[in-house]
Length: 210
Image (cartoon, rainbow, N blue to C red):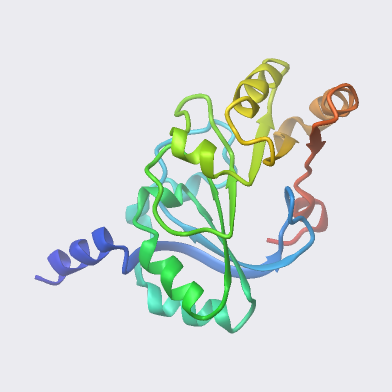
């Protein structure tokens, strides 16, 4: 009976498979260097071979956690929350966003955009992946487009993705961490030739923070 109740609450979004939650500086993209409370939700089937949080993929490894607990913890640390994963849009984000906004918090998300949109977001970072493309609604909603560059072919993919977001969307190219020394010079040259893009680095890894 308890397991069935948990399944119902997970479907409603009042329980979420929480992998971890922590207060740190944002390391990437438009808000780099800003303090924020990160909520990492378990579960992802996008399957990026270079993913640095593969332990997030199996939602069953992460305890179903009441959103009240998540929200209370977040409010103790920051007025800005970043929901990430895993792939957070595999779950219903409406209750979490409503609870966080009810406390006057700014709520950001980082997502592949491959699942139907739920939740109301103050900042929507779309990080598209080749093997499971974003839905159109994600392109329409995106405030920030962050494309991971693993090899030269990824620049073509980045341009294909940029053509589908609004002109106001901020565009970032970020090297895949394990190939950063080889790829970063390519990104520098590309941004100099195509200044609508900006370079993004995973600065939290250089600073050795979460």
